[in-house]
Length: 260
Length: 299
Image 1: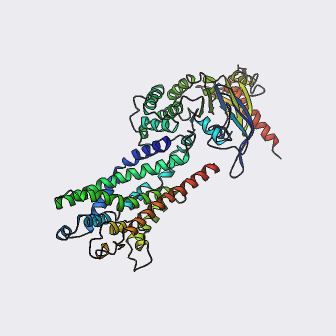
Image 2: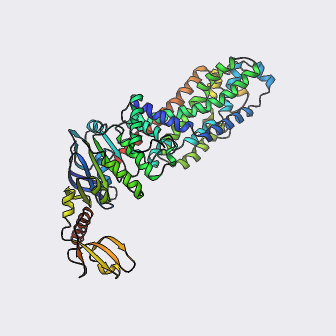
Image 3: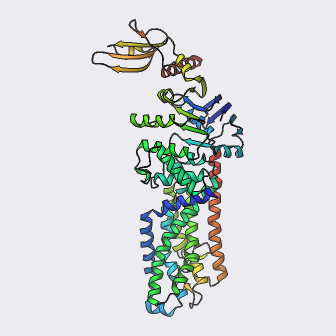
């Protein structure tokens, strides 16, 4: 447990100091919310919960992609820096260090995203002159923003174990635009499935049920699920995929160590 | 703690044999492992540190058999290891890095860990730069930070792979002085290409060549391997005249060069015999080994 917590704290300290990531997340998140293009007069007649849900999906349009690009290959960083041998000799468990690294990276990037998202939520609260959006904002962070972020963090640690980080970055960008932003009528895409890391299933099922036609009435990006059960299933699926990616990475690292 | 290796063999991909039926006993105290590049020193250290497994043979440290994962982990709890190519997280300060290493080495009490980190920083002479990011450290500071992390858990066995490689003379002396203060009750294994590291710190040593131990014993008896073989030659002729000999050192003067050479016979009629040192003994052994290997090759 000490190795897991120590690795998480160490990784958190390193990722939280990625100042460029703070800036990129803030710019992409806030720019995404401007894309919502919803007139203030319309917003104010929606329930606060629905408005926060819509903004959360728009905030998330590029943020997980940016986080994924920044975190690509961090699991192999110890080897590249020449630290892997030293860490291996400490007698700490490799798996504990790996899960700690995942937890620390996810926590750090989530902190950066939360900080920018809270700015958006504060603006909504100010427009409504109500504290209600703050609570919904935190709930939307947990249900809409966080699962996709955790999945992308896990993929960015795991996939570069078999591909170079540069190739992974290209593939991640391709996957992001195809899997999230490509209209399903153009080609088969994940955008119409609960595997959508954008978070629109959760936003629609948990936040926008009161809107006529749900989120789908607003944009093709905001797929209509209209069921809290489906929303929860989507969140569970994204988290399960993230955990599976880290388990696969753990297996690959163990195999590499045995071969050494 | 006594460490012993029996019949250890390690072959890498491509059929490169790094260690070949290696037997070695390492007693407590400072123990030097000398050898040229490719002799198998780093492979030996990696196996002793438990980060690489031998293909064959056994490695025991104290009562632990390093082939058993549980024993290996327990041994690693009493081990300090400085790898040859140690990198650092450039964005972490020296103190933060040591704090992390301490956590992994089982120093779970924050108060105890912070105190120990302070102690090893002082010992390594890094206390004044401890809160600077390690990315800005010089090569010598990095090696001393590596030594500091190896000492965090007050190890019973300390493995140091080329601790002075690439350092300037001042840093090298500083690291050697630090090494000399470390042995005490510990087993300190110092792998190096530089015989001066061993002569200034170790009473016992081994010489590796081609993945085998070609000498193991007192450092003084290693020097005796060159008895009657060391010569001082002063000449203004080019080095080719001394081709049959191994040149240990050369000092260029305005009108001539003074060579210290290892040779079974005087390389020039004017050669003067010299008292051998540890480096001479090492070079004589390596020379003998290289000749034996050349003779063993098919025509």
